[in-house]
Image (cartoon, rainbow, N blue to C red; front, side):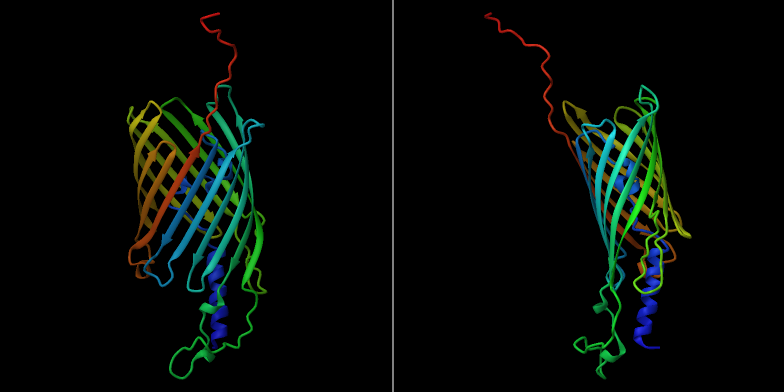
Length: 335
């Protein structure tokens, strides 16, 4: 078997693995709201929200997997309960530098089921452009062997087909929110991505990108003035593969008065049959930074050496100053 055939098989298996398994994933799924569900666009207190996430996975392999995402979302002031957002993510994986770049536009709308806003439903859609490419220069061929060792200066003389693929994807999401009281609230959501199942194959073979179904739930329970319990679950299914995570974090409020807010977050999560996740975060005013580390104990241990993924997230909410409307004029004392 020639290296050209080996290359073809490798690329085919690689794409079957990536396309028919999972899209990129995050351990801090709650800290990437638009990626989790397009219905989250514009769902926050403030004017503009900036969110960033970075994941570095499996440092023990020759080419670690690196993923980065950035999003910005806001509300449309002229239309009540309407939010919008944009998401960009970039992922590099494997020796062939399989690169994935996607840009999404999101729009969401909230419906208040009760006048007191205790029960709300948010729905959203996203449309994205996805681009994938491979770096064929990272592969070796038998005719590049000079009799002693591999020589990259020797031409491979291989005629390779397209090394990139661009298509678009469509997604939808819905979220139910229940604010029982000032101490307790619940959120449940479901979303579906890649509804049009775009073709991801480099070669003549059609390899569809499977629909990804995501289900999540979370709650915030205020134990007392200082402490909050925030449990959450997340189930992601794509093709014949699935990922199930559950865990909880605690938030300790250091100060929350006179316009000052400081808090510390810590938590533990479990990704079923794959990894345990340790999380630590800090709130400073409207800025949040979170750090997490995956301890891998799946069947991939020989390759990962128990090293999972390091992940960092940040969020900043910009709130513009709005002067109060003057409804009457105050006359000075001398009049």
